[in-house]
Amino acid sequence: MRHRIERAILRVMPTTDSPLILPGDDPASIAIAAAQLRAGGLVVFPTETVYGLGANALDARAVARVFAAKERPAFDPLIVHLADSSSVALYALSEDADDPRVARLAARFWPGPLTLVLRKRALIPGIVTAGLPTVGLRVPDHPVARALIRAAGIPVAAPSANRFGGLSPTRAAHVVAGLGARVDLLLDGGPCRVGVESTVVLLAAGRAVLLRPGGLAVEAIEAEIGPLEVPDDGAPGTAEMAPGRAGAHYAPRARLDLADPRDPAAAAAFAVRPGERVGLLAGSDAGRAAAQAVGGPYAAIEVLDAGGDPVGAAAHLFEALHALDAADLSRIVAEPVPDTGLGRAVMDRLRRAARGASATGGEPSGGASSGGPLSEAGPPDGAGASDGADAPHGADAPDVNR
Image (cartoon, rainbow, N blue to C red; front, side, top):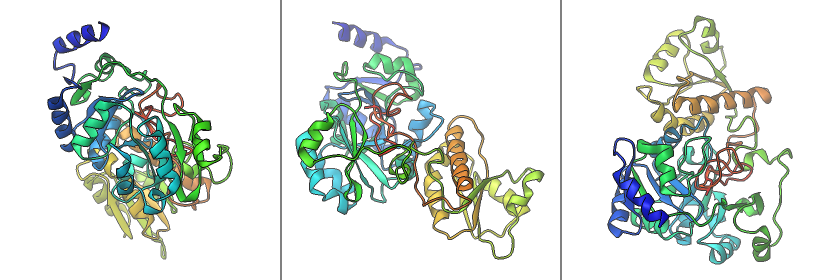
């Protein structure tokens, strides 16, 4: 009765304040939502844990819209949701996808509240994994979620469908109250039956590490594949296992300095000394021109977004950092972007990268260190695995509370 009343209320809510709301048990609704995902839209859908805010996991710009809608001030790895276990090999390196432990756990516990963190293939954009070389994969145990993913024909990255700092939604009405028209479409699947995010286990490169306890008992997992490592957050070598474990998070090997080319006091940062290989990370074409006017020549240049759009900057950030990291640079000078909206998340990551460089004397210990917790639909942001349908990725599980 309560759910029928909620649906009636949702149907009369003004469209300017709420997304298009469709019944999740209607095949026509699934088809519409799937088309929206393929077109780069944001679709909220139910899982067994909480409602997730989904985007095409292969579309960096669509994933950037997820962070913008949530007003999240930092990037965390997101859990990628699959229709079934046969898709694992498409998105994880064969060395990990073919690990017999992966097949054993998938056969035993998928669909269900288990996220497996494996080394990713290059087609998964960096914004999905917060720059990490691993990706969290899960098959949700909800008929609407699986029907949507199957109909869309793409993997779906999804944190919980709430604004940053808010409670994770377990009913469609919660989503409307929290996000309103920030999303394009909402599939109403009724109340979620579970409120605990998934258990996250890293099985990359032969390891077996518990990154986060959750809805599947650790004892059940160990009964299938043997003991799991339980890393100490402060132990050497654990920071790069997943997002959020290290204060510096992702830092390129070369030192990264933040400097505004329009500020005369920062001009020295753009000067290139003899023998130096300096890379430029510009926020826009205008920023690149300003930097070239006061310094250079630069050995490599990456522009986050030609027009300075923060969504485009977020979508390109990790690929740009990786490209500069591969250019054998002495240092990188990065132009700040406006610290508002999604620019806050971009600046958070750049500041962390700069701290990582300074903390190691300009030689951080290897590319992808760590980001934020995997996000999965689940508890409130900041509680456990952060915000998302499920948060995995090792020490820093994906940003999904599901």
